[in-house]
Image 1 (cartoon, helix red, strand yellow):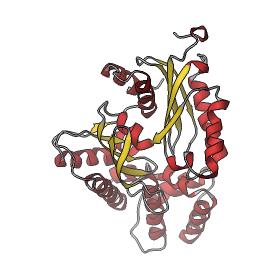
Image 2 (image 1 turned 45 degrees about the vertical axis):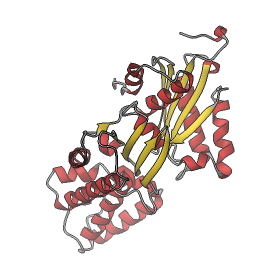
Image 3 (image 1 turned 180 degrees about the vertical axis):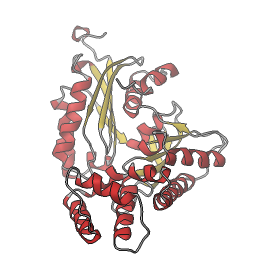
Image 4 (image 1 turned 60 degrees about the horizontal axis):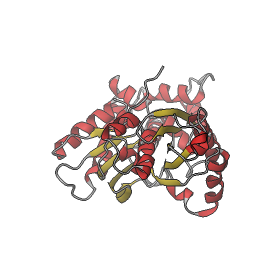
Length: 334
């Protein structure tokens, strides 16, 4: 284990600054993980920058709490809303995060698509489809986004994403309650989730009021929290939910296949909770995309570990592929 007396940085730090949470991995340059950290969302496009900064700093400090952070030689951050780290009034407060965590080394911020791709393969070129709270398809080359499809945020894009699913679920419930649509299991599931311990009124007109008020009282991105209800209802036989699932699958597949023509054996990595969590959306997207390609899609591992892999590559460009496997392996939950 390196120590401060060595006088030179011999560790790297990778951070996945995702819209759902922040994860950090501190590792040696040969792929030995020495610390992990985890904190709340870092969606710089949808939440106050002070909260984003707090979550980034917390995860970084957790990951380096057993080592001297001055030994970290490089940091790579894969960020949702990467533009906030490079332009405008948010640049300075986000840059101060690293000082607050005791880091004195260079920090490179890349798009989360870059680290998501690296979480599935050590190759330099290929494509990635991400579907979590947001959604994007991207072509990656030499750690840069060369081409993108969607990823335009919850307000005007992110088709097939967790937010999209949550919004469709709420719309389906409104339609069921005011008789524009058919009854759905989503009605009770959505109302119960949004109201928590509160009693849901029996009258449909009152349920509309409760649903509308609850939705507008919270941040728009909170609708993504309803996403798991949709595939669950679909698997229980709900036709409304199944149509939403089918549409989400079609939108995600369309995004991936709209990227310019790939090399026959080019890797395609699938990342994000909807695609890597083993649910019906991920399974069907994987099945359909496999028909379009010579090689099967690859499920992403740890994006924070992938960021650490990219940071290690700055120090040692010819890393052993086994180090990639060690860093991107998802930790086993206790």
